[in-house]
Amino acid sequence: MSFTGHEPHSVPYRGMLLALFASGVATFSQLYSVQGLLPSIAGELNISSSQAALTVSAATLGLALAVTPWAIISDRIGRRRVIAIALLASVVLGLTSSMMSGFEPLLVVRFLEGIALAGVPGSALAYLADELTPRAVALASGTYISGTTLGGLAGRLVASWVGEPAGWRWGVAAVSVMAAVGTLFFLLKAPAALGFIPTEQRGLRPILGKFKRALGGGMPLLYLQGFLLMGGFVAVYNFLAFRLEAPPFMVPVSLASLVFIAYLSGTWSAVASGRLVTKIGRRGALLLSIVLSMAGLLLTLPGNLVVIIVGMVVFTAGFFAAHAVASGWVPLLAPATRAQAASLYNLFYYVGSSLLGWLIGVPFMHYGWTTLVLCVVLLQMLAVIFALALKHKK
Image (tube, rainbow, N blue to C red; front, top):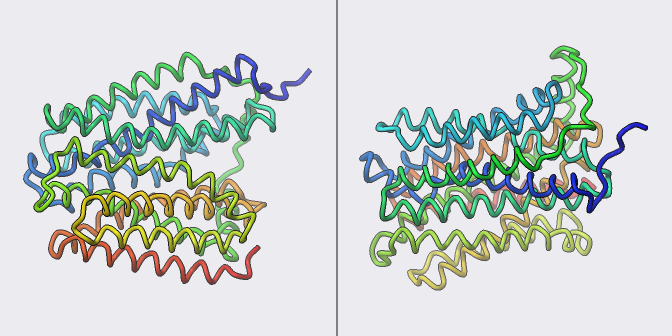
């Protein structure tokens, strides 16, 4: 009898849940570990705040460029093998980055680390689809996504808490060690690939043809949502620590990093956005989420720390709700090219993180937080305009 997938509550299924959760934590903890350490990196390497932000952008750019190639490779050699290779390589590169003495070598290693990390999001969901029954995939997918969210939060917190007394290098190294534990967990718990069928090599032209079709219709309008919203989101979190550690707040790094707990509001809002879609439709839910995020960001303008924290919670909840709606809309608008459309959305999403997350630091460095907020609000207004253009898209 042919393999039809592991059923829920079976031993391989439970192993899959634990393995994919661990891989999500290992991936996104390393990807964003330096974000809470940017002031320390800037101080030690004698660079500006916008230059320090390039350590985040280099990794996310590497991930953006490599997600699709890794997905193609996984079609040939298997999802489990690709994820294992990606995690092992990223841990080695993460530890190496903590030893870099210069700014430029650090950027190169972070870029390579992003390329390595791309193997996980490029293969994880396909691994689930290969090895589980259809009714088991939804819950397992949610477990993986929760691992990515908590991984991003844990990486920022662990790096900041270790990095404040010991230096940013030890903070980055601590996160890499945590990721090594997650990698070991994946290797021990991930079930063997029984449902994977290698695809035959068909050349480059059919692949490019599918990507061309995935750029048709209203798809670029959705890709731009990821680019604009993620770029502004990362910029806010990149430079918030610089604001909180400066007068009049003078908040220590270990305490400033607690602002990242606002991410938990995004974990809730991403799920809640699904219920919102059923009530007011995808376009309405997307617009409302963007406006909510914008309102939260404007709350960070006053010089009151409590109001800033509330604003960050609202801003984060709105962003993740918008991201959930936009990314969930992508496969519905491109049913014949779902994989390619998802890859393009991820490409725009992480390029926005890399480019805008760094670029907005330039006006912040010269003119302060208010200018940064105005830049991000402008991006959000553009996202609203593009969302309005989707009004005839179901």
